[in-house]
Amino acid sequence: MSCEHEHHQHEAPPIETSSAQSLNTQIDFTKLTALNCTTPNSKLYEIFIHEGEESKITLSSDCDNQLILNIPFVSSVKLYSLILKTSPDNDHCPKKISLFKNADVDFETTAPKNTHHFEQPLVGEFVEHHLPRRLFTNVHKLTIFFEGNWSNDEFESLEILGIELRGEWAPLTKDPIITLYEAAANPADHKSLAQETQDSATC
Image 1 (cartoon, rainbow, N blue to C red):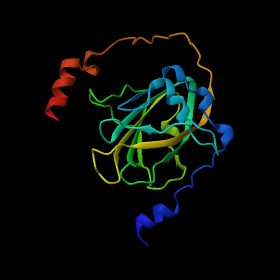
Image 2: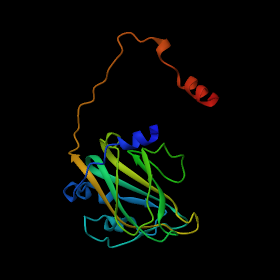
Image 3: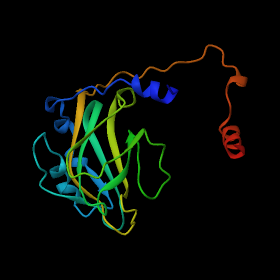
């Protein structure tokens, strides 16, 4: 028996979620934005559905097969899963999907390392993607990067037909800022920004 098989055999199954854990009510729809999308920001809220519902719109990419959706929250959330319905057509179904936690992501700047990524299967049904919960705690904003399609044709648009987020949430709190000082700072323990930049350049 191979190690790979043993590892797969002992993998814990994902924890089931329910519609009662929907985070739709915690989305700040007034600040919801999308990049390279044909749908105006004021209509983006219509893509978010509850279990068993159909969205009123279709999100389509504009110039190519990439689309970025920025989802801010009015509370601090812990994400359990992301449910997606996409086009069953391989020209329009997004393939690679990257998630970014509390990050500013656009097409102009170098994106930070994604928090998690997965592939959307080529089906015309709702698919629930269970997320590593330890990575998605204290989330104030979630960015979804839909990248590429199953036909690998960069000139074809992507189509997203429905989105639901599930998890738990807590009200945002304004805790007092506590500053910690070192009793006796040791210069040897602290690298200058210039040294860090130099080290990065030589890696």
